[in-house]
Length: 73
Image 1: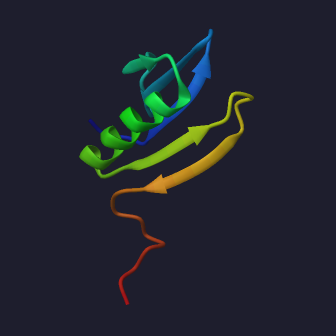
Image 2: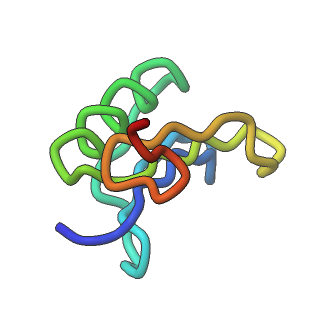
């Protein structure tokens, strides 16, 4: 799986989608459940996890991979 993971709300469900794909990878009844699934996906892929609020705005971002801004010092 390549690409960042996005957790978002659509049609009454919370979903996780891999960047660049047209369909959700999974769905959940609650934001907390979807966020947990998305976090695991992002960790497995060493990717960025983008968590959107119900209104679609980005609420949180977490990086679990090769973040160029996170250079060890």
